[in-house]
Amino acid sequence: MVRKLFNKLNEWLEDGLRGLLGRLTPDRRVILVLTMLLVFGGLSIYMTVSSIYNFGKKRGLQLEIERIETLRLHQEQARRDSINQLNNFKNGTGEFE
Image 1: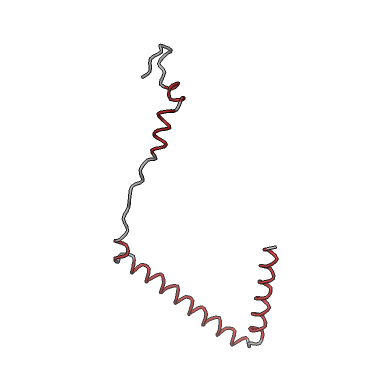
Image 2: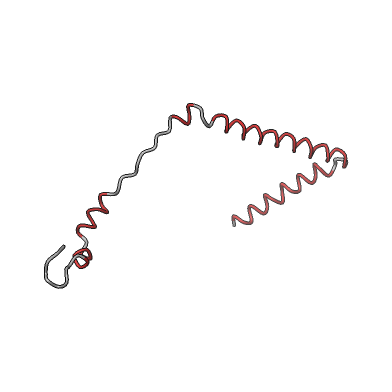
């Protein structure tokens, strides 16, 4: 159902763009493509440079790294685990390590 909806949307957009761009002359299409390339390329370069510039600003200093503590549940489970008793059993003498 969702696939059909996306296919209909895709066909509708494709028909609309073909209708708009089909009326343009080949020279105008080239101009439009080059203009879009320059605009989107410029925006991409601007966003890249501005993010690199702002990387060392105050925003980066506000981040604090906290250490993750071990879960207490895991430690308590390891103490109560019956397999630990079998692993720590010494040579059948009945004494634990």
